[in-house]
Image (tube, rainbow, N blue to C red; front, top):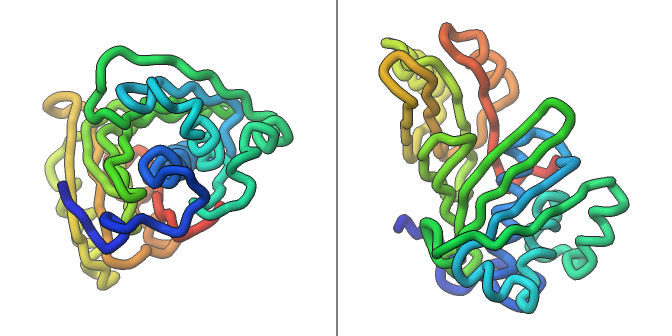
Length: 224
């Protein structure tokens, strides 16, 4: 497990009662929203382990909903996130999964908005820290601690070289990189955790590279 900073121990500024069940859940919701790229219209959350057993009493459902609304961990509206969701027309469905999933505090989030769809599996691993295990069906790992780019592309020779060369040219250091593919020459996803946030122009340049299908920016320091 890659603990990044002091918040891994003492937790972030937050609305309680629990850094694992509340703050971490808010951050999971925000990452899922950014993966979708807009305000969700419908959300289905499948909860595992401790999340499934205690989410109602610990407010995990409200925290996840708050994250999908782009609330931060210390937003005073978190206790009324279900009411705020109704105001924007977002419906939520809660499903109890079997077993612990990849972690005892884990959730599979599925989101829809018009023709857009996003799917993510993540867990709250303590102190408000999260681990994301899957993005849109690809097995990757990110923490949400750093600006992150998720690139969906064809599994072709030279794709990773062109992506890393572009980031290097813009003096952006890669702190961590992970790749998953569906099969040789099939669809693939590469995620980059970066030391600094890229500009919109870099995202546009990535989209112009050969074999790039989609580029998604995930940065919890930014608001929608």
